[in-house]
Each structure stands twice: as structure tokens, then as C-alpha cells.
Image (tube, rainbow, N blue to C red):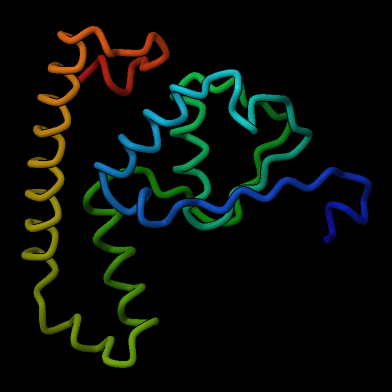
Length: 153
């Protein structure tokens, strides 16, 4: 409302939480954005892009997929959470402590074990995505816009 009041066109793009919460979702989000490219609804210039919570990761994936999203000012409402297992584990544990009625149960599950499980799951997913990516390239179904995120490992 505040942006509209100050004369800005307000475009709200909710982050697809189920996608941005795991590596296979990032890949799915990235592929969809790469397919849309210049036809993406956000493929234009904005005065201000205001990223809240997981918004920076969504912004990162959208730009990385080759969508020409540009802005004069990037406003981060919180610390950007990039896809790193330790940052994700720390965030997830604190979120569960705060959001769940039985959140203190998280403390019974050791943080190093939680981190190990997240790293293992992400590594297996990354391997599966690399094989899938390799296979799609061999079939000629590899869009040109899949840049560094999928071609440099």
C-alpha cells in the first residue's frame, strides 16, 4: 500500500516456498524462469525491488535464469539467505523453535546431525539434478538460457 501511495506501481510476487526450500525446487524454479526468459512477467525494469524473507533467493534464481529483471534499488528486508546447508539448517531450526507449539523438541535433535542430514540430502539431490541435466543436454532439450547455474559445477 505504501508503494502505491507514493506513486509506484506495486507488483507483488510471492516466493514459492515449497520450491525455494530445497535444491530440486531451485532447479525447477530456475528451469521455468529460463523457459520464460523475456516473456516472464518480471522481465522489465523496476525502480525498487523489495525482497522479504526468501525473496532474495527467488530474485537470484530469476536473474540467474536470464530473465532481464533490473532495478535501480534492491531493498533487502532481511539478511539474504543463499543456498548453503548451514544457513538453511540454522534458519530451519530457529523457525521450528518459534513457529511450532512443540518447538523446544528441536533441541533434542543435535544440530551437527541435522546439518549432516541436510548436506547429505542436498548432495544426493544435486547429483540427481546433474545427471538429469546431462541427460537433457544429450537429448537436445537444454535451453540456451540455462547459464552458469546449470553449466558450471
